[in-house]
Image (cartoon, rainbow, N blue to C red):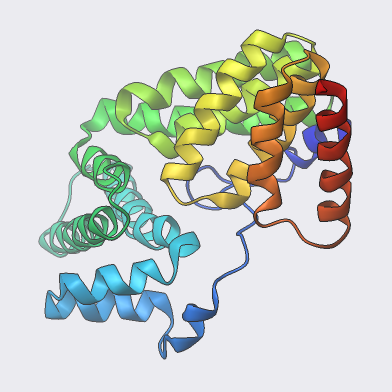
Length: 271
């Protein structure tokens, strides 16, 4: 458990460099001749939603990060303009923000169509709709997550729990599902460390589902790994087996062997 929690202390910026180890890409990605960011730009220029959906289907771990690069860039332009002595956007900045918003929405619609999951478009349409106060709340959520990660690294569980809860509380009303998942994931890890099984499973279960919807398999696997320990400790055998089976679908090497042994032990314990 400690190893999993310390992994959360890896420095990152929320929604820019997510706490994710991407799952191995499928062989189909090798058929893509251009990098996904180039395809994203080309398909937007050509307004070819079908081609974009096809490209996303072969690159699921890269969908959210590619779209979010436009969203974060647009927000950075706005923040820089608002920080001037005389705040305000010029025509060039307005045009750049508008283009990035429209391209992100185009990509999100294609991703929602490709995977039949509304979360991509909901997240993106929420982001481009925020007013000044909501943008500040988004940044505050990012800061809270960084605080949670720092406290986890120091094993200051109470501070980590407060910061993780703040992150989730700020992100969820915004439709910032990525930030919500990260806050809940950190919260669940802390509750697991403190032995609060119900609270841990509540947070981790929600985080896992959000990460799955967003195509963030690495983050989802981390949630599942911590959930597995909690479920075993609390004697919830069938759910633990379901989590094990999920983790085994893309486990390799020593992890696969360890999970298979755990599964066998759980099956025998339930007989």
